[in-house]
Length: 268
Ligand SMILES: Cc1cc2nc3c(=O)[nH]c(=O)nc-3n(C[C@H](O)[C@H](O)[C@H](O)COP(=O)(O)OP(=O)(O)OC[C@H]3O[C@@H](n4cnc5c(N)ncnc54)[C@H](O)[C@@H]3O)c2cc1C
Image 1 (cartoon, rainbow, N blue to C red):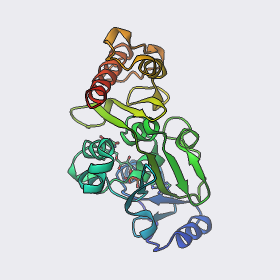
Image 2: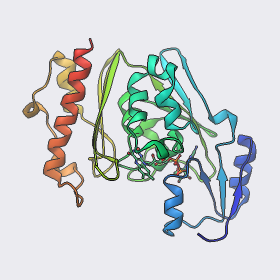
Image 3: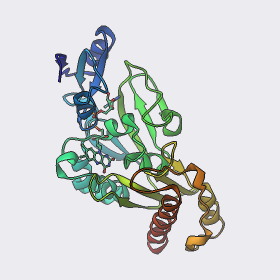
Image 4: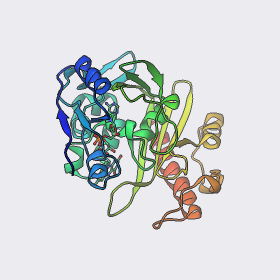
């Protein structure tokens, strides 16, 4: 590490002022992605603005068929919340399969969505449910919030404050994870909404999280269990890395999407 100034503001106004006034400030929330990046010198901000002491950024609520969560809420609180488990079980169970207990007790939803790691889990729920992102500057659909690998449309002095997930009729998340890092090699979030199906795939796309629109259309037409061969996946869109090549990842997408769709259909 190298010298930097660490701030712990108690209000959003104070946090925004710090971000505007410092030479090159960065927001830190759970620190589970940012601190490793600092240690590897992939980022070198002059100041860190910790947003986890700001009350407005914490907590969960259910209202008007939606589940909203403060950006600095940790995964463990969502995974174990009786309210989340009762009203948004697919989100609670997704939070419970992120990483390990240490990461789940520090990592936050706002940090995950702002980091936009192509192998992270929460982007699948955000896209799979059509979430809305609230920030200190605007309210934006999730699809307009993301902007490619590890990139979003956030301004340097803009803080994500709350994420609003519409509640589905039914939904399920299936994750095939790397045995060591526990990140998703492929994760499928399948939801049956009032107005149709949404299927979001994380961990597999070379441009980040994406929707499996062909399978959405098939389920919209009939709602029957898809066979693996019925599920169209564009192999040229798949990531290749040292663990899994594009062809194999495409097959994992079919398997994860089918398993999640089966869970949803069996719960009808
Ligand atoms: C060993 C290990 C295993 C992991 N496995 C998984 C996994 O299986 N699945 C998974 O999804 N993730 C995994 N992660 C990543 C983890 O979920 C991180 O918590 C997450 O990527 C970032 O959340 P954070 O709160 O820690 O954010 P930070 O690291 O604090 O910040 C990440 C980025 O987001 C920005 N940011 C943070 N909060 C806000 C905000 N409110 N508004 C605007 N910008 C903000 C920061 O400036 C920074 O650029 C793993 C991490 C580790 C260390």
